[in-house]
Every structure is written in C-alpha cells, then in structure tokens.
Image 1: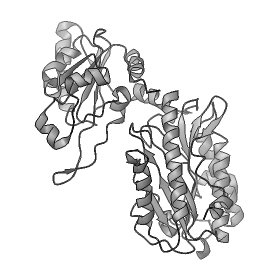
Image 2 (image 1 turned 45 degrees about the horizontal axis):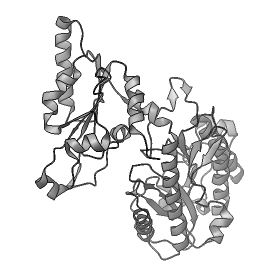
Image 3 (image 1 turned 120 degrees about the vertical axis):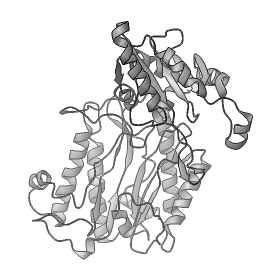
Image 4 (image 1 turned 180 degrees about the vertical axis):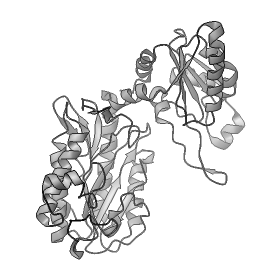
Length: 438
C-alpha cells in the first residue's frame, strides 16, 4: 500500500491550529566548482509531500480550508530540463502530489503575503533554510508592524519541529513495511560481503560490493557513507577512508545500510574475523558485546525507554570488562564515574526512519520518552580497545593483546504491541555462524 501523504498533512494541519506552516524542500549543494552532490530531499518536506523537487516550498494553511495545501515548484522549462532533468511543474504538482493549488517558484515572494493573511502565526524552521529565511522574517516583521493597527495577524513565529517530529517518531504500518524492506536489503548486503572477505582484500573491495548490492537492489544507494574498518581502524567510530588492506588475524567491522527510493533507511553493524576464526581475546570481547546487545534488545518494549536500553548494555559491558581485567572496581562505581568510557564512548542506539539518526525527542524535560508501538530504534553496543583515549585514573593499563580490537553489533528494532521486532535479524551475528559462514 502506498504511503498516504494526504493523511499526514491532515494530521499536521490539525496540530497547527491557527498557524500557517512554510516547509521548504532542500536545495542542491555544491560539491566543488560547478559540480553538485547528488540531491537528497529534506526529510520533513518529503514526509508531508512525497515530492522530490529541489527548491520547492510547501504551505500548510489550516486557515484556508478550501486550499490548505499549496505547493510552489520550479516551472516547466524545456531548456532547464535538458540540462538538469524532468520537472513536474505546477500541473504535475497538483496531479502527482495532491496540491490544492500550485504556483511557479518565482512567484513565491509576491504570493506568500496573501497566503499568510488570516493566520495566527508562522510555522517555519529558522536557521535551516538561508535562501528563504530573509523573506519569511521580513513578512513576519511586517505582520508585527501591522498588528497594532489591525488588531491581529501572524504575530508568532514558531518551529514546526516539535509537531512534525513527534509525528515522524511513531511510524505507521506502511512506514514499517518500508523499513523492513530497507533492513532486508541491508542484511543481504552484509551476508554477501562477509562471504567474500579474506586476507589480502582491501576495505575498498568490500565497500564497492556493498554499493553494488544496494544499487542493484533498486535503492538510492547507501544511507550513509559505509564504514568498512579492518583491525584497529574499527576503533575509529566514523572511519570512512575504507582503503586499508584486510590482514590475517584482524577483525573487520562493517557499518552499512541502504536508503530506499523514498528515503527509508537500514543501519546494520556486524564484526567478524577476516580469516574466519576468532582469537581468544577477540572471541571474549565479541561474546561480551553480543551479550550486552541481547540484554539491551530485551528492554525494547512498550513503556520502556531508550535510557533503559542504554543502561542495560552499559551494565553488561562493565560486568564483563571487570571479569576480563580491563576494568577495576565495583560495577556501580565504574558506571557512576564513567570509568568505562575509554572503551565504550557512545550511546547504545538512535531513532531510525527517513533519517538514519531520525528525529524525535529522547527526553521531555526530566522524563525519558516512553517507547510505544511504531517507534524504530537501533541497538548497537560496542567495545573499542586502543591507545587513542587515556585510561582513567585507577583503571588498569591495557595489555597489548587487547589493543586494536574494535567490535560493534547493531540491529534495527521496531517496538510492537507486545515487545519488539528485530528488522535486521537476517544478518547473522552468532559467533559460531560468523565463523561457519566464512
């Protein structure tokens, strides 16, 4: 079933009350000289419109019940389309995206004041759209100047993020299906590249195979620059050089996922031995990270919180590191002091959706946000043993046999009515399977 953008707009219009929302699309970004990065639509704009036109602007106008959804889009222009590709134009905007009215983008400045008349305020994200912000602020200032004479007007300027991002945080059934597909394609890519890895290959060979699988599966490609990190490179959290040889005896950490044509993403990390066999130290740390992940996954349920997921993973990791002699002290003392953070320095997960690190609050004031069905998050504990961070006072020096081991295990998880669904379960992670499949 196709995603209902109209349903989303109706919900957003209801939440706006008397505010008029201005939601801009992304604009092309320059890579170098006159070369641009591949275009990626703004997620908020896409969520409400399903429109991939660069530079477009959507108006959501609850005070205009006959025309609550107005699009401004680049006009049809045969010469521009020869150079840069197809444009929907105003007729296409109405036909394809359900706009009540559509205008050429170059008429925005002249028509926007009229559309704002009668609104109680303007809903616009300041600081994100520099090409449009001066116009919006000028119109808002004009409304403020006229308000004392007219006795009203759009005298408030508020951000759409709290309303829109709360909607995006809880996925509907159609979105969950898209995320399942992104997870399945991403998991298949991980299985495919693990089967090809052997000593002597280069990280770049693995990255190329990931890219090929994503594109051959009909996606836009990677959801984020893939991390293919052999040996000590895995201790660099955002390593993307992906150009080192894979050495016999090292582990390989792969953090990669695809992005579908409608921008829903997968995000998986797996770590396995390049030569197909864990060393004793590698296996000990791998078993510990896996135990932490399984314990954290068990905390994903309605009424739980992302804070509990993280705290559970941290406790299991600290307990295991104490047993292995990589930490010293009591479990509670190490956690309270943060004395484990030279070995585990990130959170255990993040929301997932149209953005890889998707929108939505984790806390509301002093209270963690409760998990509810439809939320999707990653669960990704890890351990990174290197000399990059100093060992805290009172903690043992790291023996050389542990150094250069970086391990992360990450799955995408949907909260269900009675627990959780691991969307990425098709990517194997049991240590015996990781070795057997090699």
